[in-house]
Amino acid sequence: MFNIIFRLLMKVIGITGTLGAGKGTIVDYLVKNKGYVHYSVRAFLSEEIIKRNMMVNRDSMVMVANDLRAKHSPSYIIEQLYEKAISLGKDCIIESIRTPGEIIALKEKGDFYLFAVNAKPEIRYQRIKLRNSETDHIDFKTFLSNEQREMTSNDATKQNLVKCIEMADFVFYNNTTIETLQQEVEKVLTKLK
Image (tube, rainbow, N blue to C red; front, side, top):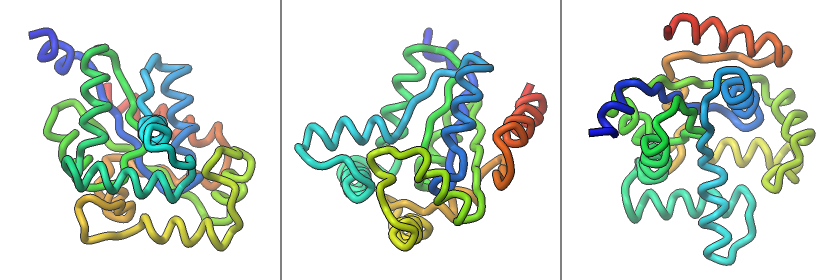
């Protein structure tokens, strides 16, 4: 009963996009300024990778994510994060959606909107170098290669960012400043009210 009430009251935003485009910037804005709770696919996968005694890097994230989706369902990871969100019952953002099956599963649940963010590759590469997370210690050629691997797939258990971006309710092009991106997000949030 409570889950049904929470689902009616809470708003769920999913976020997809290319590497270094600004997904985290949107998440930070929603968390700090709008009170959203953040659920991270990266954090979920990092925990699973550590359980499997593997190195936490982009290759292991892709491998483990694909393995979990193949064993359970194309939307397995997102479903796990969604259940955590429902138990809390607050507006939330789920980052980073990478398969169409995840989007379909969330859209079936109700008040869900998908944000996508993109930017020029050179800008995005500079951003990941500044971010300096465990998956970002790569050269530009590897950056482009990693991204290409995740852009399209006919396999429902594997990443397909092109299709995810196409399925987005709102797409942001983050080629300028953080402030500009935040203003664009704010305009969309006003529409959603």
